[in-house]
Amino acid sequence: MKFDILTLFPGMFDGPFSESIVKRAAEDGLIEIRLHDIREYATDRHKTADDAPYGGGAGMVMKVDPLAACIEAVRSGRPASRIILTTPRGKRFDQAKACELAKEEALLIICGRYEGVDERVRELFVDDEISLGDFVMTGGELAAMAIVDAVSRLIPGVLGSAESAACDSFSDGLLEYPHYTRPAEFRGIRVPDVLLSGNHREIAEWRRRRSLQKTLALRPDLLATARLSEKDRKYLQELVEGRQN
Image (cartoon, rainbow, N blue to C red; front, side, top):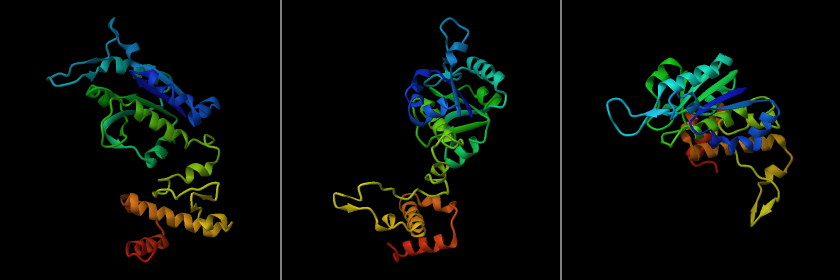
């Protein structure tokens, strides 16, 4: 998977991309990340990449000409790139979207800034508009980092075990079950006996039920689209009616 990130602040990516799983994936050749400074494509001597909006109003708007030049230069070497704009008005990013993007050959991510980008950038180039949620940040760099991280872990070989991604929260529409490790008891709180039993069938059933419990308690909205069996639905009904704990 190849990632190209277009930004006014490339230095923001030094830490997140030089640590942990993303760093190892890049070193192993499983992903490639290139950063592109939009200002380098501005033609005036001040390298201006933003300007006041036509019609007046607060803030500045990212200019179309340096952005277009940057996009076209990057895409000339990667014509199959899917172009993403990070923006508060985009569709909310979720695991399903990460899975969809992981199937692409290359992603080109434009980090929005200020009041946004000139609308002609959207009309001429953008395939997807993505938001992390219903809040506004100072720029799209953090959103770009989140997209790269979430998509990268779905690339075969990036995680130590393929099962790790398959068991993540949201992989089947539910929140993940609780995890424990040594010691078996800490400050009076003991690891559930079933996890120490070695009975894989009972462990799997316990994990499924705790996943359903967590989702019902914390994100009941997810249950509307989660993949549920009849057994799952019966258990949820019992939880709602107070017949299970």
